[in-house]
Length: 512
Ligand code: UTP
Ligand code: MN
Image (cartoon, rainbow, N blue to C red; front, top):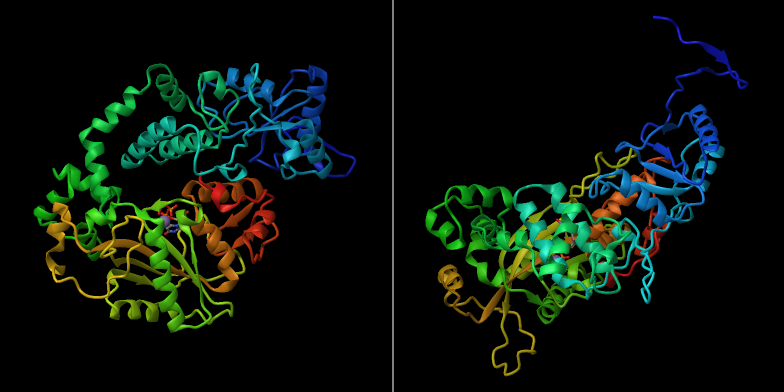
């Protein structure tokens, strides 16, 4: 081997002339020559490489940061789309202004990306069109509950769900991201041009949208909805306690519906037995009125066990939804430590009052370590928690469907046979409702509140933002700065958004 030619630099450190050391392998930069010119590009390339940056000669899928000078976001995106086949740009590439590059050169490392560094990608304004700018992460956008593109989102959600049933997580998330972009649009999409410049719309999603805009429906969605496998997976995963893996095994054994499972003599765990028994109720949406009744019951029991403890309704209802699949509560006490041992007492009191049809309580297993959370950051939280099914009395002499139901305090005389009745659709004077009770120490309350308010995609995007953009790990317990090796405390959701460098988004706009 011929040794590489080496020379001393001014600072005295040794480097290779043709083979600079890459100090930041995760940052792969491409400098756009357009409007920059070849000689300036060559100069900046040499400068960057001398400082240990990886700068590519030509654009490829490996590039993470596209830097340009005097180009608009739309121009760069159009260029990017001409480089990469449509849909392959779903892995977000940062489109950055030269200011990010020069600041990074000064700092001697890639500086954190601020909004001012990003090129704004806007829609081409039509004659009367509104300028639409959407950021790439759902946690940077406001997503209301009511939106203008339900026909499109419902279709894409079928494909997302089907991908989940096929355990294709990448595809599942890609469709969900596309859905969440459509939900955030201030108006209905009427033509494909309306989508220009928007993030997260891959080739597949665009194909489906195009078909719906042109023909009113998508063949792929129709076929999926009619497929035996989709229908079976949908009803089987609708059983509380049954996940995709179990449902898929049952389907391959020839089971298609809950009644098939009941007849088949499958070994079922307690959760699945309850899931089967209360199948119809648990697949009937829980109303806000019912959630409010349950709130009052839980509040009463919690106060009886520990005066001063506080309960908070979270999940979809906190985001303003009028129905949900369950009711989620956080329980805490303003004095740290007082919440310990609370949950078993609450559960036992609820049980004595005949209010629980099923419950499984898990203990708190969260431990904070100096080195930060275990990596990769797990999104499973470790709170003391009770998954339960409440027995909620239906309003007895109600003439108005609006009147909220009461709690059922006595055993139903028909209790044991209810599985068959439920599956047969017979109406009882009570309703089974899924309720999650989660206990949090007050020091983790803000994180738990943010984590349990959802939506699921919003949470996922928050964690992705924290990791990829901020080098931080976010969970429902804490926020850890991996660079400074320290936990960032917060007593409100606003403070957490601020730590993350994000604009605060209120719960009703987290419906991503
Ligand atoms: P849900 O699954 O209850 O969703 O989780 P939701 O938004 O309330 O929707 P519906 O109306 O019930 O169908 C609420 C939030 O709690 C988090 C989820 O990520 C979601 O954001 N969660 C749920 C956890 O953090 N851990 C869990 O084990 C379950
Ligand atoms: Mn919920």
